[in-house]
Length: 485
Image 1 (cartoon, helix red, strand yellow):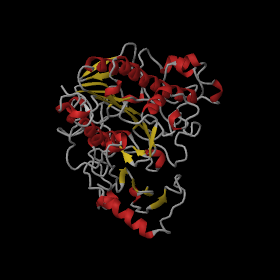
Image 2 (cartoon, rainbow, N blue to C red; image 1 turned 45 degrees about the horizontal axis):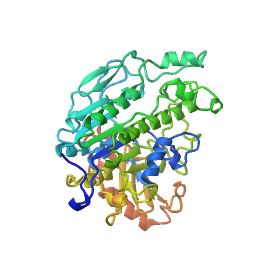
Image 3 (tube, helix red, strand yellow; image 1 turned 180 degrees about the vertical axis):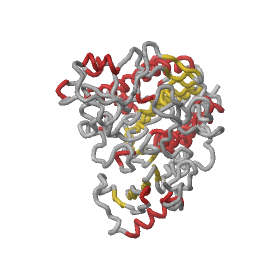
Image 4 (spheres, one colour; image 1 turned 120 degrees about the vertical axis):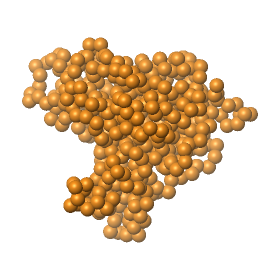
C-alpha cells in the first residue's frame, strides 16, 4: 500500500487526491475571487486552507478539449482533442459521446491506477462515449458514474447516467428536450417546475457516489475526479435553492431564446446552481474530516473554462469575468482564466495566494510529482509542486498556447497574442500587454512589431496539424479544397 512518507523517508506525499472540476464557472463567481452576490462558503473555506492562484488557465475555452488537456498534460497544439465533436444528434436515443481518447492514452488516472491507487471519475466525461476507446474505464478509472455525453449533460434530470459500462436509470425521470423555447411565460412557477424538473436531480446522485467512493477507498490511496456539470446551463436546480436568493433580482422570465431551457428566475437559478455545487464540495470536505484523512489529501478545485453567455445566464450581472474580456468560447482572458485552488493541510500554506503562471497541462505533472510518480515524456506541462510546497525553485513557462476552432492564442510573460478569424484565412494577430491592459482593450501589434514577430513564431512552433481537428489556415489547406470548406 502507498502511504504518505515521513520526513525521514523522503519528501511528504499526499495519500489521496481529489480534483473538483466545475463546468463553465467564471473566474469571479466565488467569494474567494471577489464574488459578492453568490454564496460559496465551502469553496471559500477550501481557499482559506490552501493556495489560491490568480493566473491559472484552463486547457481550452470549451469543455472537451479542456478536459483532454487536464487528463493528458498536452496543450491543444499537441493534444488529441482540440474542439468539441459530437458522436450523435439531439433526438431521443441518439448515439452518445464526443471524440474518444485512443486506446492506451497516457492519462493522469492511468498512471495513478498503475501505481496502485483506487481511481474514480464522477460527473461529466466528454472524452468518449459508450463502447469506445475513450470510455473512462478504458482510460485509467476503476469507477465511472455520470454523463459520458456532454449533450445529455444539458439536462440535469436525464433518464439515465452511466455506471461504468451500464446505464443507471434514474427514478422518476422521463425524456424531454433540453433545448426549448416558449413565446410567453408559463402561468406560474409551479408550471415551470412541473415541465422542466423531474424526480431525481443528477448532481445529487453523483455527489452520493463520490462520498461512497471515498468511504470505500479511505484505507488505500485514492484519486477522485469529481467533474460536476454545475453551473453549465440549462438552468435547473431544486426550487428551494432558487428561493434562497432575492426575488427582485429577476426582472423577466427567460424564455429559451438563447438556447437550453426556459426558467422563471434565471439569475436566482444560476446563483442557486453555484451554491448547490458549493454544498456538494462541502460535503466531500466534511467527509474527509470525518474520516480523519483531510490532512493526507490534496484537494484541487478549478473550472473547465470561463463563464457562459447563453441559456439564460447573466455573466454581466454577476461580474463573472471581472476585469477581463471575453467569455466561454473565446481565447481572450475571460474565456480561459479560471479559479484554481489547491489545499493540502500542513504542506500548502493556508490562505496563500500565487501569481504563478500555470494552466491545465500542469495539473498532471504537479499531481504526479507530489505523489511520487513520473509523468510520461513529451508533455507540455510543468509541475508547480514547488509553488505549492515552497520546497524548491519553480520552473516557469516560456509561454502558454491554445487553439480552438478559428482562434489561436499564446501568452509569454505579460504579452498575449490572439488570432480570431482563422476560418476566414485571416492571420491578423492582435497583441496585448496584460500588465497594463488586463482587459485586452488596446491592440499593440503595430506599436511593437518585434514582440508581435516573436509571438507569431511561438504560435507556429507550438503546434502540429491535427487530422481530426484541422485549422486549414494553419495547416496549409487551401480555401477552395473540400477539406477547407
